[in-house]
Image (cartoon, rainbow, N blue to C red; front, side, top):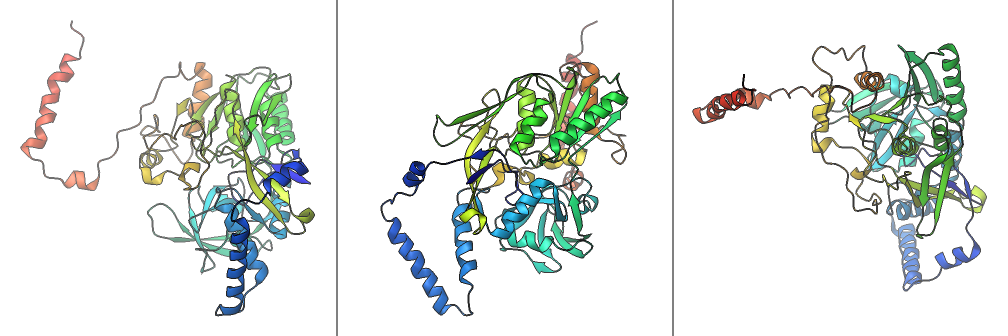
Length: 476
């Protein structure tokens, strides 16, 4: 049996979706010999034999072959790979929402372990780990060049045990973060009131997400019958199960398409629709997204945006728009293949692979973040992967630029959430178009600019600007 999964953005942390079957005829066609395939297989056998006999130390043939299989698959795209039996079991634990570890979604980039996002209320989140951080060592042992599954195994272990991660963030010097492993029992949905407006946080898409979100929102609405609107927070949500993404979308849509997925054959299209009934009764909505919103989170954001059910606030999402199928080998006894088999599309037909979902109101969480996002070297998204699957639409992700809004001077970042504040402003004002804009503060001058000599030539344009300003004033 082959099981189709919508994978979250991580190459290790996965989700499970609907069942799929591949016919014997399709298998026969896929496995048909081509040209020099057999010669290359003989080459592989020769290489393996040479390594066995001449390598400086004894080798583990099973590990060598598993690494070769994984290398073949990961060469296709960042999300295909080989899962050995232990990794397959851990994946199943992950989709159930209960497992042991630190609570971080990770991927592999050029031989390094990169954090996609920390999960809410986990050791990683409490320690301040961030999306885009690199983990270079665990307890002083380097992870560079180590297979992702092996790195994850080192992070998982007995609850209560401490370990130290060495982290690289941006251009800063490496620093150590001490954490204690916990049993991660992810509660993926929580709700509360923000003044007159409801706030629903969905942090992941596991088997319990739709049920938890429905219960949380119904309880909130029962206690607050005069709720004026709702903010759905999908920031740093790395994705997960396709059926749960459809379920969350269905909570707010009265029928119609949520998402479609299209495979290798142009005729191979599956469409998923919402059922009648909006849980909120049509209350106005905004959705918060950022670069850590990926996969299933992007399905929900794209569906609500395309169907004009909600406007999006925050930053462009990650751009993980592909579906992976987990194909068990000998019923899982030999692990499984995790193979990219389709792209998914929003109701209007957008593929968000690499490009991501762009918000209706672009808002940085801080002035510092706005300046970092304006630096091309800081960009972290699906498009960052050198072998990422193309979008098939000729579109490219928007280049580095400064977000339209950032917190004004005086906004307390320690106690306030500027993106959430602006999402509520949109609800209060009846939409993005009616919401007064807050311009991004001017960038602070660099030390080089402050120390640069002021020459007459440099001062000239500043004097010349005065008449232009005066001319722009209306005549009395």
